[in-house]
Image (cartoon, rainbow, N blue to C red; front, side, top):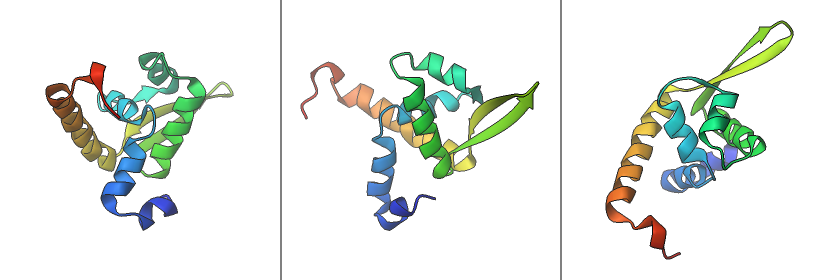
Length: 111
């Protein structure tokens, strides 16, 4: 686990992870089952592959996502899936999404 995350209070640590761009969407996408990197990228067309790779690495480092690598004809293929910890977190992300849909007008948010 990321040492910086361990030192923070749990709510702050979780907010730090979920507040990163595309992280909730990646978790939501992987909640449907394992996906290859290209599949994740296609589900998030407004993001860049570099950004998705960074966020997947963050999620791996925090044991939320697992990466299974396979080699075929000298080509490495990565399949990403949620760990048990990630599956637990996905239920929280879903509840946040449902609350946001019910309680927030996302077209008129005030920061």
